[in-house]
Image 1 (cartoon, rainbow, N blue to C red):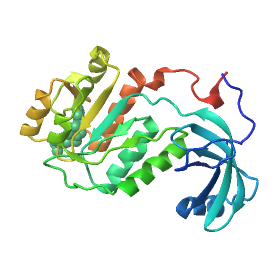
Image 2 (tube, rainbow, N blue to C red):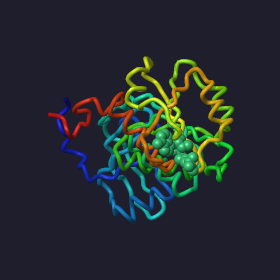
Image 3 (spheres, helix red, strand yellow):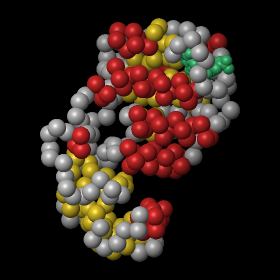
Image 4 (cartoon, rainbow, N blue to C red):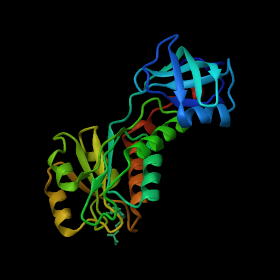
Length: 259
Ligand code: SAH
């Protein structure tokens, strides 16, 4: 277990940057991230910042110069290599914006590897603003100390998702009409990689349900006797998977918690 680093302090701001980092890498931050650093966090020259590049991992960095519009930083040393993310995908039907935002944020916190939004017949929304979605998952990753961003796919129609579903990946289909108990399904699926398919506010229609069930990789699962809202279903399913097959089974994986 690595020793708890004394520098940078835990309170240092964390940011994902587009550049790939190396010791001495100079990074200039602009826009809302610069505003956050200089106006909200009030950083000045010499202050520590933690940077992630979604490629090499998490770096200690120092502010070289902080202005209102841009902040110049220098990467100092690698703190943690980019983590291995448990191989779980979430395929949520698009739902109303604020509720879908919640799914993006919370699924990221729960450790999802890939979010692949689906458009189904009863979807009230069929579009997603990719920049906004990316900003939400990036901010959630910064906040929860992920060193790898979740992949964010473009929304696709249900038929396309099913047609392209990888042969060796289980597709747990959350069916409010009933299915296998989730823990049992996870325990009995041989492959370690999987995905969850969650319907929209109005659920799937019968034709969609039949098409999903016809896919050999599909495993209809029940999330209990109550009808959950789509966002609750997505997050509850992910949490159960993380506890049974994901990284909630690992111990002492966080550097600050090592002993
Ligand atoms: N058909 C619905 C509600 C849909 S709930 C209605 O009566 O209006 C939205 C989605 O959450 C569902 O399509 C399903 O994927 C998931 N879901 C909700 N409750 C569930 C449960 N108890 N078991 C499995 N999936 C559930």
